[in-house]
Length: 140
Image 1 (spheres, helix red, strand yellow):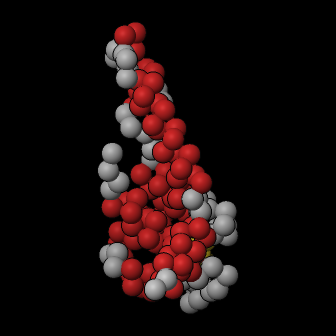
Image 2 (cartoon, one colour; image 1 turned 135 degrees about the vertical axis):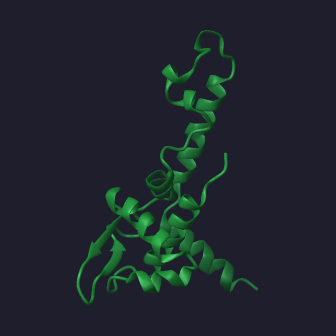
């Protein structure tokens, strides 16, 4: 399993907003400091808004902000909003997608791996990522 740029850049954008949580909304031009093309960033932010993770405001002081605090938003939510459900194969969560479900010896493995991966992603908050980053920056 490999994350696409949607998931990686979506998390980058959310961390950018998390660093500025509680301040004024952030304009798209400022968010382009992340190195993500503005058009692509706009697509990602649209998906994140639809998932209820980002708020938008219009006008001269408009922009983007987190819909909840960084302590309440998980990496799993961001990845799901940008990539879709995380699973190792379709049959891991949908038995109808398994053409060999009657005699498939591996379906339970894929299901367990998917559950473990989702549990891990859902246990990591944006605040936790920022705290880890700050800790690493201050270590000698």
